[in-house]
Amino acid sequence: MKVVMAQECIDDARQSFGTARFHPASAPDFLPRPQLGILQLQRLQSIVRRAYQRVSLYRQRMDEMGVCPEDIRSLADIARLPFTVKNDLRDTYPNGMFASPMEEIVRLHASSGTTGKPIVVAYTADDVKIWSEVMVRSLACYGLHRGDVIQVSYGYGLFTGGLGVHYGAEALGATVIPTSGGNSERQIMFLKDFGVTVICCTPSYFVHLVEKAQDMGVDMKQLPLRAGVFGAEPWTEAMRKYVQEHTNIRAFDIYGLSEIVGPGVAAECECQCGLHVFEDHFYPEVINPETGEVLPDGEEGELVLTTLSKQAMPMIRYRTRDITSLETEPCACGRTIRRIRRIGRRSDDMFIIRGVNIFPSQIETALMAVDGTVPHYQIVLTRAQGLDRMEIRVEVTPELFSDKVGAMETLQKKIAHSVLSITGIHAQISLVEPQSIPRSEGKARRVLDQRNM
Amino acid sequence: MKIRQLSVFLENRPGQMKLPCRALADAGINVLAMTLADTEKFGILRFIVKDPAAAQQVLEKAGCIVKQTEVLAVQVDDRPGGLVKLLEIFEKANMTIEYMYAFNTNRPDGKATLAFRVEDPDAAIKA
Image 1 (cartoon, rainbow over the protein chains, first blue to last red):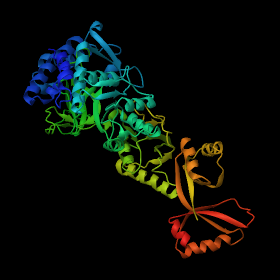
Image 2 (image 1 turned 90 degrees about the vertical axis):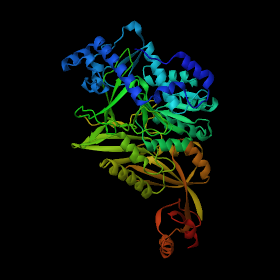
Image 3 (image 1 turned 60 degrees about the vertical axis):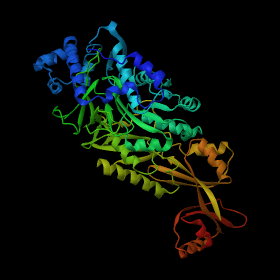
Image 4 (image 1 turned 30 degrees about the vertical axis):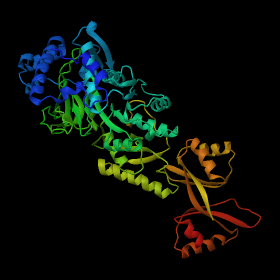
């Protein structure tokens, strides 16, 4: 069964809805739960059949477990299916997970993995349409509409960020400026000269743009910019506060991963209390990462996603390695689709120091708890005489700088104390010169692990 | 009297002090007095110039973090005990000195100028 957003629906939005509060593409967000469940089950049964018939990895695993597509009679039966992990996508490179012949595939993307073979994902024409649909629904969630001028500063290319947001923003009926990442001065020139109202990029790149604007004498608060769509890396509430205070915009979180579709898997609404998962296309579960057992709604664990409609590359129970919980309490916005709590912890980013698990977001929270700090930091891990050391490099700003050595040392101590109270680890705090921590145009590289393990 | 002092943040590694000094040199700004505070991880270069606002602009353009603070400039007799007399005044007024340094000496009037960083320079002047 194929259900895609009709082109007329998009055209309709462009022509007659203008700045209306309700975008027709958002309708599935408000389905009554029982009907949503029926739709999900129909789609689940169909996608499991497709995966079983067309992808040998799924068939083998299901056969081994003695489960066949006909065994899926309720949504709860999903727990009988095997998990899929990132390495499965590496091991089957280049096209072992494709469920469509190449002539039906209209697009490939690849993940930004730094080691080994890239993870390549494929889309049919319908997959691309559904991707646009969920992106329209994400942008509508933020209260964006036709008339908005959206600057897409996510990288264009193999990375899903740029093109994913691009097509969604166009389908929304907004004006799109595809600047891609980089050339920060030009980014700011466009923000200023074309009345850009929305910027989409990684939060760390936006912080860099805010700083650059200051250098250029451009007051971000005077620009028409009203919203930021930030994702592709975990970021904290402290970062949101910093960004909103420095720019007069509302900073919204967007969640996605290329293995599932790219950006547009889940998005915050104007209530900013968790991200609504577009669960008519992406079925969410939260599991205990140790045992694989499905956890009840509200409990924290690893997010597992199943694509319910993706034709070219169905993902069955894909383990995202992102830690969150599913929130079922009704949202003030009226959407019935469930929310995931903001993801601050991604198992992939976690590092272990002296036996303690630490996430970069914890360091960010600790750092930003100290007045006057900016979110430019880097964590350097080293090992000397068998002992792990964590150094946190923090850039000094005019607000932080004092001519008194004592005051600077107090600042170091304050940061170290804040890190200690959140992580339980004594960190060495190094105050470094402004601009000495490399800026990233995409995902920030927060951790330098120099331990030779 | 009160004068404006400039401070610059430096990382503790070779060549760091050259950047601000080069920037000032290129702008033709002469340094009248300076001191370098060092810790294990960073340093603070503090100095006095004739036109602190202009020097601050030059340094910020060069990418330095600069701060202006008021310090107390006091002339004392350039002979043994010259400083002690002044310190006695500070002590009586119960004032602590964060740090201090001297301007170039060997002046024809036999006076030496010292810069003092204190919590409240106005109170120090009165004392």
